[in-house]
Image (cartoon, rainbow, N blue to C red):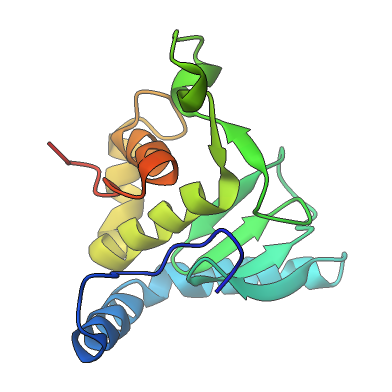
Length: 159
């Protein structure tokens, strides 16, 4: 497991966890294949694959504005590591928050998106964009920040 990664579904017995993770992986396979094809294309320009945070990660991915993008169980990361702090969506929007809410680890934020994909499969992208896309009001992004900060609450419709 990567340095800052959290175990996926930690409270479940190992056989149950394995079955659920396999079912989720199959459910989100179309998204994962899109990410894998994009990642493979990036290898020719310097991207480096590794396993981290429950996903196949392509580090030094050559396209994009910076940070990371999750597609199924694939993370396209423009940097050399997921173990870097990133501002929360609320902080980027200029909302006043306590110091502990200002940044989270990028890898844990992306791990939350992996969990969201495992649960929602091919429904993830339409729901994500219906909720506002890349925006601080998007419940998927707020949930990923919450999970990265606390280890709980990756589900976008948490109470």
